[in-house]
Each structure stands twice: as structure tokens, then as C-alpha cells.
Image (cartoon, rainbow, N blue to C red; front, side):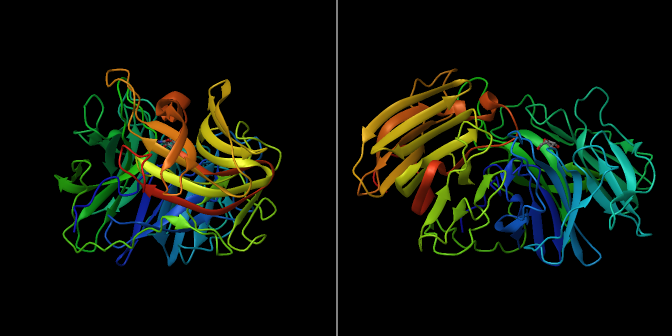
Length: 502
Ligand code: 6LW
């Protein structure tokens, strides 16, 4: 078996929160402007994770109004198991504020949300004490007791600890009872290169909290480590008594300042205890090998033929997804997208995509755009995306970078379905302090599957360092006008060179 690799969940999967029930681990992540929201993963070994659903997969649970900004929406869930149920508390920063959902099966269905109007900060956490009282702790860092069945606050929020004096953005608190202490883990320094994890402990869930003399217990700031921005962690204990930390990090590439294009990803590291304080292990590209047998991960299917009525949970759309605009019911074995007025340059457009999870990948999709305009997009947000689209007997590569939008290349195509392709490939310019992280080639697939590229574009413009925000690249299908049908979609990791036959 090959050695396990970090990230354990690649691609835009930030703010991981983890819990264990028996031998099963479950993990939830942020999802921002995408619908469905809060992806849920399952693992037996902490290293191999399979997405089993999304906690917020009904429009009644996840309201993202048409004006929801990119990197708005759903932030930082906490996932816990208590009293025979799974609990998720999270924030919809674009409307509903903090909300709580529960489920008996983490694959769903999850309940309708309970609002937490008195919890007035992001990154809420839930912890129960021995008396059954539920403590909600949130960024700042403040805390209030709540009734988790009604969402009502039982008192006023109280500031409990704000991390290292002078460090910005104390956030992502998680509170645990471990041994004789209550430990308060938090992220500080901001989610960029200064990100760090610190901890304090106290005699009760409300403190008073004494900071760890070795804070921060984890940071990669100021290092040349390949994984940067490490922070926003959560802890879990394995059945053998060992402790583990999941956290977010990024993998920047290219020259200065380094660009990360896959968003913030989920990493794993072991945790030891020394003098009653946690000591985080090394966060490296080789994931720690736990002392138990690793599950042989089922190979992820690379191709979706759209022959099921429902879509795999990995498919995400912008803000909402309705059968009227997205269905496999129109043509058997095809995904049909109907434009709803917006374009990729708008906050709202008919789009179905999946996270880019490999630095180098190869994507193909068979498109029938005889009834509209649409195609294949590599999207960071509405101001940063590349696409190859079909309309009026032509294939066009479109680039949107900040305020500029341009058609980079165009070619006439025959009638009938056309296979469009996007490859992310090694950076093609000079390798120096100004090199980009990768390039994105867009074009038409040849019969052997290789890419006949119409354009190859610098990937830095689809990075978080350029676009800003909290997300990463999502690659998918869209319709900007009329109706566009997709027969299949194939995503697979690829060697850096690409564009050749598969
Ligand atoms: C999240 C905050 C953060 O709420 O980024 O990395 C915010 N940390 O804790 C959005 O993911």
C-alpha cells in the first residue's frame, strides 16, 4: 500500500470539524456560496474519507439569496455527536446567521434549521457539560449557554479568552473536556500565512482559561514548508486512546508570493500530550500512518454519466439548485441545465461543478448546446474564471480576470454534441520569482481524448491570492442562455504535462 498523503481531503474543504462514534469518524466543512452546503465525510481510519452527503441539501435549510456574495454563505460548521444524535452548528453570513441542524444518520436527512439569534459571531462551537448544559462558544472568543432544542440563549454572551495578545482574528473555537480540564482550542493570526492554533485550559467550560505556555501549538508562518496557512483545527480521540488533529492548510506554488488555487484543504496530524498540554505533530505532505490498518479506499469514480435521478453529493451549484434549472429527467442519461438569466460574470448562474482536487487534472464533458449557450468553466468566483463555451456553431474560450472579460480564442465546430476539455498543466512561462502556479488549457477533445487546446492561460488569476475570499477552484458545467445538455463529465488527476492522449 502506498503511504498515505496529506491533504486527507483535497481541494476546497476548509474549516474541518470532526467527531467519532464507535469506529466511525465523520467530518464537516464550510461551503460558502455553493448549494448544497456543508459536505459530510465518513472515514474508518482518519486518512481515507468518502463524502456521504451534505447537511444542508434542501432550499428550506440553506437560503442563499440571489445577491449572496462569493465567499459569503456558510462558514465553519462544528460537528458533534451527543445524546444519540449528530449536531451541526454553523453560520449563514448571508442571511440566517447562526443555525443548528441535527440528524440520526449523518448521511441525512438533517433537520430543518433552528435559529440561534442570540449567538452573534461566526464559528460557533457546541459542548455539553456533565449536567447536560450546552455551551456555545464563538469567534471573539465569547460564550453563552443555549437550549439547543429551541436555539434560545440562557444568559448574555461573555468574553472568555481572546488568544495571544496582539494576534488578530481569534476564531474557530472548539471546547473539550479532556481529563480534569476544559480545553479551548482556537485559531488566530488570520486565515492567511499568519494562521496558527493556540490553546488554553480551565477548570470549567466557562473558564477561567490559562493559555498554554507554548502557544501557538501549531503554525507554519515564516517557514518554507509546502503547506502554509495552517490553522482552524479540531481534535478527536481514536478508540486506541491516541489523539488526532484535523486542520486547514493550503499548498501555494509558483514564485512570489506563491499562489494557491485549490482553496484551503483538510490535513491530518497526530497530537501528543505533554504536562497536560497538547503538542501537535508535523503537518507534512506525507500523512501520518495511524497504528491501525488503513481502509483500502474505494476508487472514486472519475466519470459521471448522469444516469441516476439524483446527483452525487460532490456536485455543487451556485446559491440554489432547482429541478427547473438542473435535471437528469429531461433526457435519459443526460444532465440538462436551463439558464436562469445570469452569466458566469454574475453572482447567480445555472452551474453544476465539483471542486478541483488535484494540482494537475484533466476534465472532459460532452455538450449539446444546440438549444442555448453554455459549456465548461474553471471558476474561482464571478470575477475570476476561464471557460470554453459553445454557441452559434462556435467554441469560444472566455477569460474573466477582475474587471476585464475577453474572448481569447474561437473556432467553428460541427453540429451535434462536442466534447469540451480543460487541463490544468505545469506553468509554461519562465521559472523564476514571478512564475505562476500552473496553467489552464481549454479546448476541444480529440477522438483519443487528448486536448486540442484553443488557449493556455496563466493559472494565477484563478487563485485565492489574486481573487481573495475563502474558496478554491470549482470546475463544472453551466448554461448562460437557453437549454444546454451534458451527456457525461469526466474528471481525473493527470501528469503535469497534459494535453496528450489519456
Ligand atoms: C472561518 C474562519 C476562518 O469562519 O475563515 O480559517 C472563515 N478561518 O474561522 C471562513 O472559512
